[in-house]
Length: 379
Image (tube, rainbow, N blue to C red; front, side, top):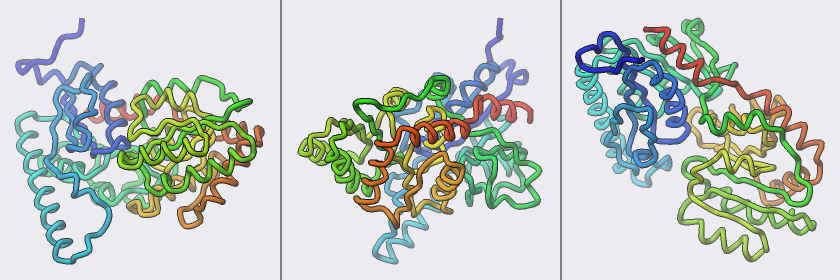
């Protein structure tokens, strides 16, 4: 029988701190790893921000610490007024500082054995606090290019685990720390890897994913592109993720052109939607790509052009260059371009099968377990 962790016997058990920003791309890998770490009978703490406080599944987390960032501070658009822009930068820096101080005091109290940064804004100050206290830390880079935060923290990291085999931007002096584990995804989605992709026969199911915040660009173009396909007497069904403010408008648009659709700001059970899908139209976030790879679904990738460090474009290129997806750059995106590409996929079963076989090869089984073993190996 496994003995439970208590304050009196804490020296026998590891204390893990996982740090993840407030998007699914950061949070879900952390939760997948937490499940493995929790089986070691230690303590698992999660540091995140308020954007995901309502969707954290704390079944494998002993305690969740929420950073007090405001949602508005994560707006990627630049303010029109320089003075307001400077105020935001100062305010953001101050909040980062207090987040770091909060982490410092919590670490002194909880005495973690290892800290794991999965990226996102809370990751930097929390990992820096670990560095200051000489607590070993692991960095996980989910994208195909090393992010700026991880690049700053890389020198003192114990291990740098990566979601892609080939990573751009890793300094030469830390390449020996790099360990390819793949990107952890939810277990329900990973299980889809064992099913066979069956091309559409009578009806084609298209799943449109706009990333954690939804995509206004896709919302403006996808309905008209779908209409091009439907005019060729192809029966098509759509499920689409969109910003909450766009859902009613999109539903009305699809209804007018006679397309059966479901439009939601968030799909809770992505495994079910991927199992239903024949084709995915998506942004190119690293975790989304890992989920598509697990399910073996042919996809059209439209990477976010303003993503930090160009990570989405690099991710999409990695898949497109290996024949695992079709890439359309934002600059080239139009109703006609997307409609013609989708029509080609809908009418060429051999292409769908080829894309499915290629993308399945991009999936890394047991990524969460491999990453967890790297973390436990430090202790």
